Amino acid sequence: MWKKLLADLQLSILMLVGGMSSFIIAAFSVYRFQNGNVKVGLLDAIITLAMVGTLLYAWRSARNAERAGRFMVLVHAAGAIASSELLGVTGAFWMYLAIVVNCFITTNLRYATGANILMLLVIAFLGHSFDSTAQQLSFLATSGLLTLFSYIIADRLSQQQLILKQQASIDPLTGALNRRRMQEEMHLAIEEFTRSQMPMAIILMDLDDFKNVNDRHGHEAGDDVLAGFADMVRGHTRQIDRFFRYGGEEFLMLAKGLSPEEAQHLAEKIRSQAESVLTGKHGRVTVSAGVAGAQTGESCMQWVARADAALYVAKQSGRNRVHLAD
Image 1 (cartoon, rainbow, N blue to C red):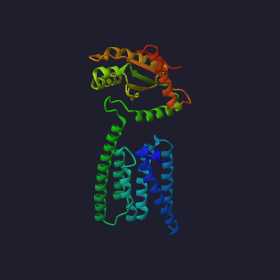
Image 2: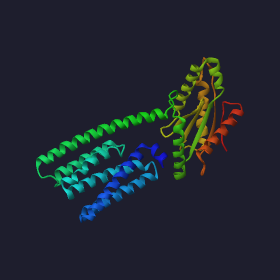
Image 3: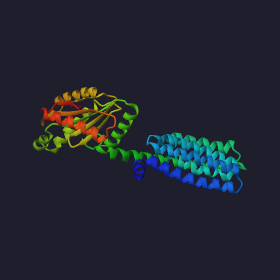
Image 4: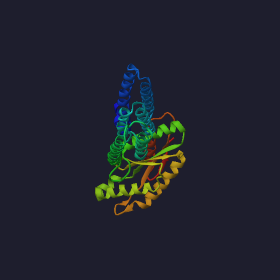
């Protein structure tokens, strides 16, 4: 449980905020019923049930978190509007909490800010919460400033999160995604394959005799070869594909929508181009590759292991060739 929350910031914020809000609103619901305020108590109960249901939906899959967050924004806005109508100025106070929370439970800040602005305009001009124009203007000024500040803070947090995520996911030398990111993407690919049966394949590539480049020409030359190879492979990578540095001089491409035979053909293109492109003062560098298509009931480790076995066959068969796993 904790591992899942730590791995997904949006889900953790959603669960924390939603869980605490549900608990507090549920307590208010009980308080309203005990004091005979059935309408407001029923409203609080409905909001609590909607929030709990949304949290359960988000917990089922990481892909549900964004949808759940957007729905929670609507629940907060509708709840604040209804509370202000039933409780007057006292109910309008819930709107301030909704403004702040809405900016952090969805990655779409424009959506959250639009909902916030619509919410405060409805409360200010269409509702019946305020006794005077002074109250109305004061409400608009404070809620407007809070909306602006919440947007700025959430936007900066989102940008910093994106930078940190990129730094944690990208190999600095080659620009390829790193092995940590590979594990995440491979798990998602297996889930997608299991659900849709869309063909998928991986190409595990290794630069032949790369150690000789470092030994004879130095690590700087070796780094140039690795970076040059990564740039070349990216020219064959579609937007839906993923390209990773598997380790050292090994790279892995996740080719979505390609059959094993189509991935083998792609690997041959890469091998052929590498043979002509990766030539310089360090001599000629060739590439061997193993290709494996996704299979039902197989784990990420088993999938990669089959590609690795195919790569081993390519190496043992003389290098500078591609082998397709059984």
